[in-house]
Image (tube, each protein chain N blue to C red):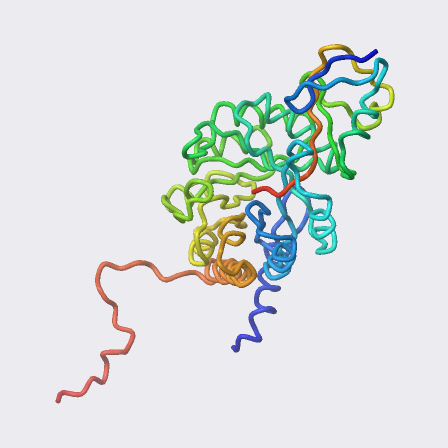
Length: 270
Length: 68
């Protein structure tokens, strides 16, 4: 096999087990956030290099919002928009923000974020579950940003979230996946897609997320704040693809001691 | 005659009888994907022309921006 075989191998993998989210099938398992992007030119290059099909956006007061040109860029790239509820601290705020986003963007999809702590931006579990339940009842396709707690993940799936999106570490921290065991447990705990969201610092973090069984990876700062966002977007794309193939290929078990790869049989006595 | 309002956290005044549509026209700054909250509830786009503002109304006029 050469690297030219990579694309067909991925295509076979996706055909056998497609990434279905909210009733839609995506061939890219990398979701990209637009926060922190230095310019629209960089945004467009990064989006194209990443191969993403789903991009997060936000709502802010008109005087503080970016120009309509950002949406033109995203439309030109052919990506689907995923509005978020970033900055919301209560279920009431998050539900209202999601409804406003549905009006503004014309989509019932929402990345639900309800933040409980200023310093760590960790999710508020109680408000999050409450908001998720209300939004699902209101017909939203809810992708819930959550902690890496498998029990909370299961509760979010139980109330009808279309995806559970655990953090690897705090938003924008670049600390990677601090508790890989919890991510793997969460993956086992729910049948809806699990999207590793937040904390990714570099390509190996994204690959690890996929190796742990995540269905996709959502990241923003790791690309938008990288020295070269376009190059990092490409690295993330390949990391997600590599991690996905590795997961499917089945890694060897970890061993305490060595296991020789060269056979001992026929070893000469010298 | 004008009515006192709070728009995006700051005091504002609009002619009596003004609608949400008039406010959006004044504030949207070229954005076509705007959403409006009036006293904590969404005003659907279809209701903008018929929703008259009252003294003391609190409004948020929002538009898309980049975000995680």
